[in-house]
Length: 424
Image 1 (spheres, rainbow, N blue to C red):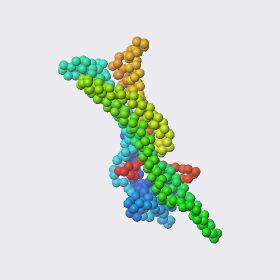
Image 2: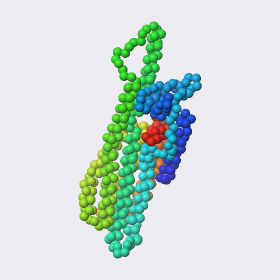
Image 3: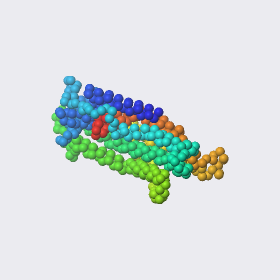
Image 4: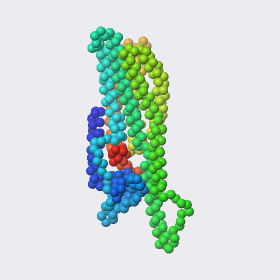
């Protein structure tokens, strides 16, 4: 189911790329919308105030060459065409993914990776309980057989945990893309256009009554200067939220990955019976555990605060289910530690439990791995299948968003762009 989800999701997105490219070549689709790449008079530009309605007669563009500046483009009232305005058609492969799409795929495919590593750990557990393939090499003792299988089993699970932390970092990277003030900029630009329109109408009315229009007492910055200031503020807003707003999540992913790598190293040197190195690494691990617990709390607190931002909760971004999507990205880490702790608590306190609940440490480890494989991983696959649906992802990655304030229709803009593929 997970692989089917990945394949269908990828195929549908690429087909939307092909369709969008064809529409742009025919001067349809997102050609006249905000953030669309165009050329006007052989100069590269981007639309900052688009024309989403068929009756719109003007758009505003910002030149992106070395000269810069803004300009207004008027529709030909006779031919209804935009003279000298041409769409920029991306010539790269439509199957080339943007960074944001890759980050989303990491989140979606994570359960499949976890299942594969858990399956490898399960094989080690069964071999250890059944004693199969003993001796693995001539002269191997059963203690060496146990150490080798337990160490390999631990490394398999820690590899799965490491990929889980990478998934958390990928989710944070995906969230960082949505931090911007683009909606505010579009609204301000549209309102300033409306103000200019009403002012021109008022001045014309005053002149028709043979009066001179009043001069403003205070000098107001031009609309272009205001837009440049807003765009600069948007860049600062995105930079601050990307590197400071998601700091708790980033530190949690880093410390967690470090803990997993350290656990793999301990298992490796334990397998080689280099106990002096193991003791040093274990001492470092003991010091790292409280730090990891602290970063876990900070990560949760960080997400509680960040998840309330409209940048993430609006429908065109992660939607109202943003928190549920984040839970899916890290639930196996919580379950992995919690479930294992409960099972080994039963092992160490089996004297207080009924006889049917008595299990050995090897049986507890096997039960832990099996539950991860047949219960938690499939649950996450189904969870992602419903919350990372075709409808949600198409809105996140390929549709153009429309904002409306006080019945004012604003322009829409694409959600995913990259330097290598700016039109996606």
